[in-house]
Length: 240
Image (cartoon, rainbow, N blue to C red):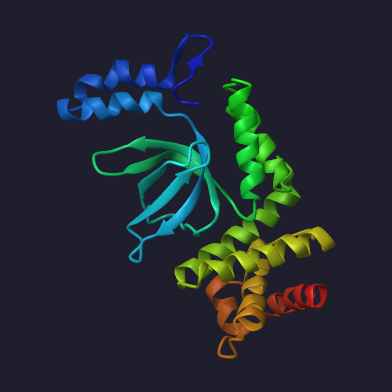
């Protein structure tokens, strides 16, 4: 992590950056900045998302403490899902340092138990914990097929979030997709065609939306309508 020593220099990336840039940081901000070094990565549950998508409230699974976090315009957050990252304090809210890892349909209690086990072992090897969590959710690290399955879920979730579809529906769609992948284990060449087909499945089957068409969604995803139709039939026939 950014605040852990690098073997060759025995200083962390945070220490190196501070040595070069600390004088450039305005005095009132230095107290907050110094707190960044104390922050450790953890797993958070997304408790609420503000109506205007300005902030989210997350709960640390380690100690149940909640934080108000700035909503990045480039991100999409779903209530009830989990997210891995390092929170850092700002003046009136928190923010995630660097990128985050989103967990869909992971079991809350199982992830919390993993955190407790690692805390009790006093290990600071967070990558090992991360690997355990990802594998617990059925993800295989560094395997292209699984990565493409996850990308489909993310594209689907992003699209429905932008359309203000209820989080519960999005999670049901992701659950349906995971079930399909578990049963079929599809080899995916174009993730957008499957994401589009999954959205059409959710719109038709879960939302009973007769106003949506495959042609309309295909244009949104910039993919072939015929391919979407084929993939939709695969998903529908497997899950019916």
